Image (cartoon, rainbow, N blue to C red):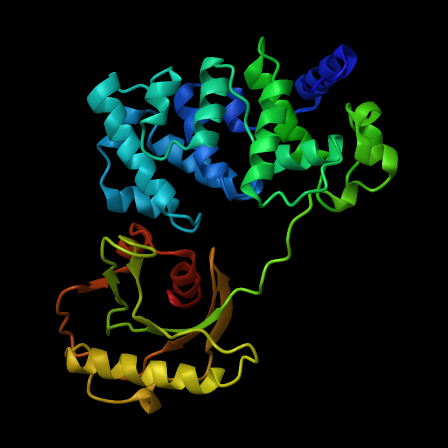
Length: 369
């Protein structure tokens, strides 16, 4: 049985109750707000999630309001936050709550596990914070605290090590106040037990932390070095008609970024390790994209030489398994006015109400007057 002294346990809870950050989901704690915040905070920093959370709960203060929202509207509010399957699961979960639980989150482990988007972490976080269920969370912050506290020198990417850490978290859980305990460990990892600059002198657990005693907290957690992600050349063609509308389409309901809206784009296979030939790949992608739009009748017939090169946008967008090396270019070929499905001309206001990915939102922000 893993143990901390009563003094350390009370010290952590007291530290959290007096030093915790003032966050909107803590000021007004309802199961709905706890749920939305926990989903948004997965793979996302608090500072990034804050404005999204405020806008989202203002638009959808409960599951009933969310369940009746069109998917495009939900995706538009989520756009830029990334990991869009979360948004689709949130919408599906809200509809499940209305259909089966009177518009509320259920309060049992079994029912929570059956909801869309509720994996082990979400069940533990929402269950403990919203309903006081004795479930221990294990996120990146908690793993960092535990590996330092007990000087665990094994690769946290291994399933067996994750299972061991979950067991430690279960043993440590303060069953009389599971929500506060879980939040305290997460808050400790986020504010004091930071990856590169841990503030050990201020930590309420420093007296029992083996890494602090050994003077090497920065070496934890141990993670196997990952290979560099593949880099994929990507081009975006920004096309406007004579009244300033932008050409876009809704992606299909399968694959990456599904159901989001996008500007005309084309992607290539990853570059080799040397990264040679990027400019040539971009040129070929542009030529093919222009020919495609010309064949559909959207643009006058032309090739990539008819595309404005001045003022190109070049940027990198990182995804979970690769990096997109993006070249965005404005079209100077005149639109024909025709717009066969699935393409549409969107006004600035219409584009703002559609769910575009962060990649395309960056281009729209730069070039939409």
